[in-house]
Amino acid sequence: MQPDEVWGTRWRSCANPIAHRFMETACEKQSLVCLAADLRTIDELVNLVNEVGPYIAALKTHVDIVEDFSTENWLKLVEAAAENSLLLFEDRKFADIGGISQKQMAGVYDIRSWSDIVTAHRISGPDIIDGIAAGWADVQRIGGVLLLAQMSSQGNLLTSEYTEETIATGKASPHVLGYIGNGSSPIEVSALRELVGDGQMIWTPGVNIDSNAAIMGQRYGNPHDSIIAGADVIIVGSGIYRVKDRKSAAKAYADASWNALLERER
Ligand code: S5P
Image (cartoon, rainbow, N blue to C red; front, side, top):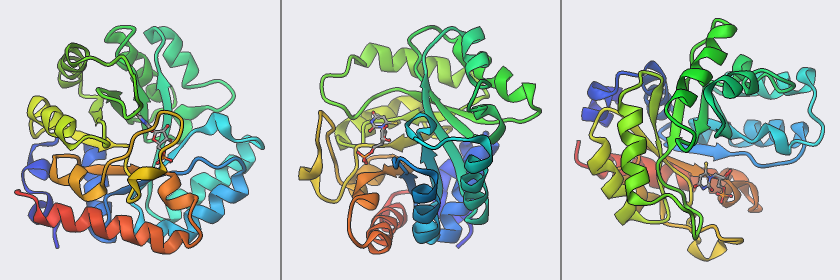
């Protein structure tokens, strides 16, 4: 199926080229899964990506939890992502002033050189987005920012007013491809979709087929419900990497998300 048939208004209304790249890959793989690859060594990460690669459409990392980081080693993961046609998303959750965020895009990890997407909080002001974009521009690359409009964790301080301000900022910037929404609550996701409209994406963590698996303040909702409520991507970590048969788990999330998209009004 062609992306415009499957994604409908989202395909036609999203201006950001990275959003289109995701939607194309999702159609090729019949999966709306972004894998949250929260493992501690690069070999483990590469093995996981090669194992579940056919069932996922993007790869999310936390580079600063890797214990054996070196630029040379990290390139193995960057290559594995490219071989599996995956956008590479560093979940850095930038939160500082714009100029510092630009510098943090460089540094030891040099996030600007390999990431296609990063996350940022709106807390410090709207200029954080320009700082991040300047980081990519410093190495002649472009990328997309996902602003945290909601969070899945219990007791977070992102009020509905904060969410509204975040969306107003995001709508004003061509660098913002969308928002992180709270996948544990379909009600919150649909409220977010109302505010966002059709022109930007919503990516939802806090998703697990086993809603009782949550630990340390995480909360989980169902992948199907999240997509029906208006999310475009489900971010799944331990629901895939922590189970015995990771391939079957990834396929189950891919099927649940893809079928929900086909079911959803376009
Ligand atoms: O509100 C949030 C935002 C994010 S990006 N809640 C989250 O859990 N995340 C991220 O999603 C978190 O950093 C982790 O990498 C992933 C969820 O992992 P899981 O193992 O609970 O599926």
